[in-house]
Image 1 (cartoon, one colour):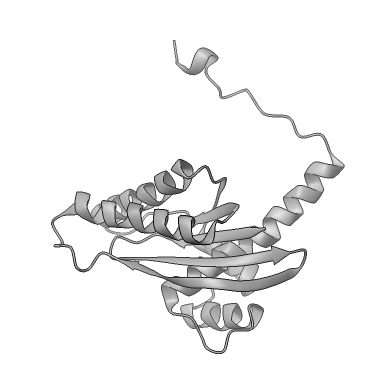
Image 2 (tube, one colour):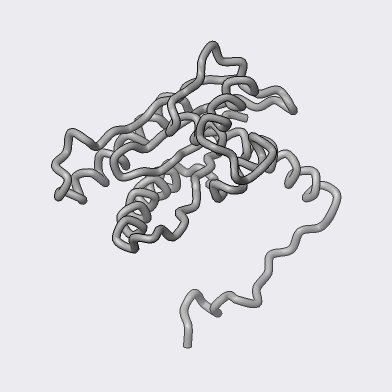
Length: 182
């Protein structure tokens, strides 16, 4: 299974692609999509760069699944809203390409990759380097994206084993009849 990890950001969005076969993980590619060449006040143009960039990554590497970091609430609500819009552009690009998307918090990713949720960026970079046997540390945005792909590789396998062992039923308690509320 080829997995694409996305670390959304309005200025820099990280991506990482891995192949997972059982417990064996292999590095495919990683990098960043930068919007710094677009004027800061041009939010729609920046979102388009992110959307198109994710589309190019999906077309080039043909992943079978994706994982995206969940936005946490910042001290500055405006920053949180802007980051949420960048995340929305990423999700829209992935869903438009027909990919199943898993979502993880930074805490969950750090727990899966480093072993504790309060790991520093350098620790994530080093563990990603070791897990994927890279010659050097990836940049912080690419490392987070690769960490999300690694998290999905581990979590996806575990969920698959649980699904095979039990009958999973869709919960309907919070759903609206006919897709709309009354």
